[in-house]
Amino acid sequence: MVSEIIALKVLEAALSTGGDFSELFFEDTEGNNVSMVDGKIESASYKRSRGAGVRVLKGSQSGYAYTADLSEEALIKTARAAAAVLNSQKGYNSMPIAKNRDYTQAVKRQLKEVENAHRIDLLKRMHKAAKGYSPEISQVSARYLDVNRRIEIFNSEGLHVSDTQPRVRVAIEAVATKDGEAQSGFEGPGRGMGFEAFELIDVEATALQAAKTAVTMLHGLPCPAKTVPVVIDGGFGGVILHEACVHGLEATSVAKGNSVFAGKLGQKVASDIVTAIDDGTQKGEWGSIRIDDEGTESKRNVLIENGVLKSYLVDRLNAKKMNHPLTGSSRRQDYTYAPTSRMTNTFFAPGNDDEAEMIRSIDEGLFAARMGGGSVMPLTGDFNFAVAEGYWIKNGEIVCPVRGATLIGRGADVLFKIDRISKELWHGQGNCGSLSGMVPTNVGQPRIRVSEMVVGGKGGDI
Image 1: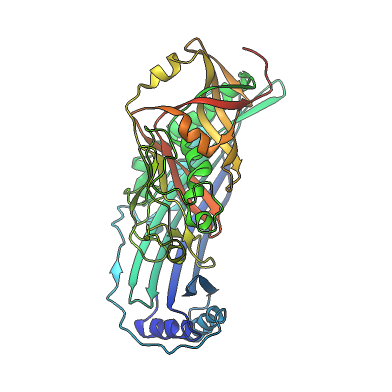
Image 2: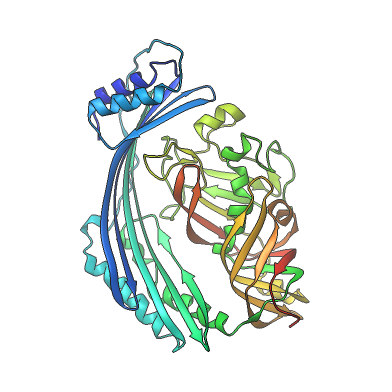
């Protein structure tokens, strides 16, 4: 995107006020977005965003500036704006930039070669499947999106790397209504690859699941409010690990002491059967990256192993503050944000327990088959999550669907109360927001059982 000669000039300008490290980040991103409501195309758009960001570091200080103008003059001006955060003076010793290491993977079906008719066909198939599930399905909204993100990074240590990061996703919301009441179901699978992702994503099955959730919850009873054992199914059930635990392992929180896990490396933070991993190297997954947005190669980071805290997720700036190695976890939404420590694909490792036994072993409790959104306090780990599809358990059997269930607790406590983990792991897809904007992340887990949780609801005994 820029010549090596210009890159060196920009890096030099960024160090002109005494910085000990400078970085030049380029991005060129194209994306398509198509939405359909009740079988009719509501919108179709194409967007392209190009720009660059310059960062300068000195100790724990940092400066960042960005521009959409990629001319040499604008880039140097941007570098000086970033450097203005620092006020000391230092000479710049020029160094060669290494030959570019390109991490781009092969893509079978390039997104730029896909006609909109193929995108629209996916949405039509989803709409037809969801509407055909039940006459109680009153509305179906479907959306397709793809992104092809090209990045190039130079830094003052001689790094020069580039990558192309394609991603595709479909999402569907089905609404079921009866006698003035309405319930909805949502599914949103995605992959980090080209259009060939839809050889793996079954769009009809996705639509049917969303419709099933909506209709099932429409006929559910109000959930009781009790403290009971809870079984949380795999896939997007991992949102509790993501929100209530691993946000507290990101250096953005740990370096400031704003985490319940700060200072606990090597200590017991979960039950013996819990191993938690953040792995950006998984090929083709929604949250995967080959390099992070500082140019560090992605890694498989074991965060908790057999209940013991082993690692945090750490970016370059916070690595200095924490004396912790880089973990390939520095990410940003786009060039308008400075990078910081973020998750990629985060999940509980598989265990050895039987899924059916988890249900059979409960006298009374909740099976959370699908999780919804929620909120968490990063400093304490206190959370409140909605259950999108839930079932009440009595005497070891599922007796009825329940709606309006919420899971309330504290992440650090829940980790110790996990007493069953099954053998089959799968992932759900989402977008995570933090200091460096929104980034695509996977959350995942096998089915797990928590021995005791507070379940919020408005119903009486079942």
